Amino acid sequence: MKICIAYESKFGNGKKCMEYLQSMLAEGGHEVDLFSVREKAPSALPGAELYIFSAPTQVGNVAGKMKKFLKKAVIPQENSKYALITTCMDPPKSKSLETMGEILDQKGITKAADGLMIKVNGMKGPCDEAYQDQLKAFAKDVISSRA
Ligand SMILES: Cc1cc2nc3c(=O)[nH]c(=O)nc-3n(C[C@H](O)[C@H](O)[C@H](O)COP(=O)(O)O)c2cc1C
Image (cartoon, rainbow, N blue to C red; front, side, top):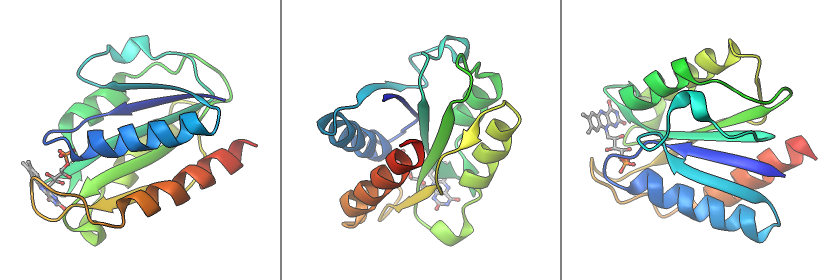
């Protein structure tokens, strides 16, 4: 399956998580395009069956760079799905997954699986030790939703 992972990451924790997710999905035989939303215009999203968007929670909600990117994003392929990830210090209070989902739901793309919150221990990280297991379970979920 062709998968596109677009991330925002201020201190590198989300980036590290997405690189791990990419390597895991690639090992499973999927073609994975990974990039930062700082590197690509939202109108230039590559075609994919599945889009994974990952961003930090800042001030209770999704980081501004990702919010802007999603609002302007052009989904080039019909029948594609999305899945969402946020890194945050206080998962129960984060509205990031909700906000990203609301923006995407208006773009004719449907949710592949429940979103994932990865806890970071402090503003600059590191990620909680459970992050690799969380990402393995997440990868399984999103792949089975498209099988
Ligand atoms: C300006 C700012 C505000 C933040 N506000 C919150 C917050 O309200 N809730 C929270 O859980 N984490 C908050 N954080 C912590 C970020 O979620 C954390 O820095 C991020 O998940 C780390 O991922 P990254 O290294 O990929 O940027 C904030 C971080 C910054 C820089």
